[in-house]
Image (cartoon, rainbow, N blue to C red; front, side):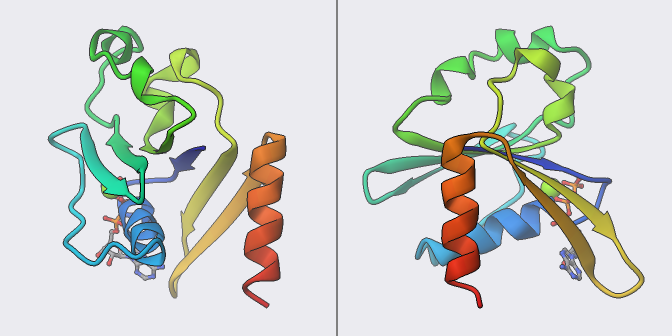
Length: 128
Ligand SMILES: Nc1ncnc2c1ncn2[C@@H]1O[C@H](COP(=O)(O)OP(=O)(O)OP(=O)(O)O)[C@@H](O)[C@H]1O
Ligand SMILES: [Mg+2]
């Protein structure tokens, strides 16, 4: 499962990821991967990788960082600033666009694959 989070600085990408981890039962601190590029969590047999590619200056830095192997069927990959890795990044299941409003935030979520559609349907059904 791969989720791309797009939005300006401070639009809430890390906060949303923290919420996902809380929702999965992770209770420890969740820090921004801005400096380490990735924070790794292990949740009941699944790896949850939280990336932040803000600091990449060109697409090839992503390839050189060796992150491609992290994107596999045993992992959840949540990516802040996916546009910094461009077309090299595997396509997402969900694409989220966050916007800052006067009060709070707005999010648009697009399902890009069948897995993404199932996830959104499940989420809608459980959040009525
Ligand atoms: N839904 C929300 N409503 C109100 N405030 C929020 C919301 N989401 C995040 N914030 C606040 O906005 C600030 C920035 O949030 P956050 O660090 O998650 O942004 P970000 O998109 O990850 O930024 P960056 O691009 O720098 O990584 C924090 O102070 C956070 O508490
Ligand atoms: Mg962030």
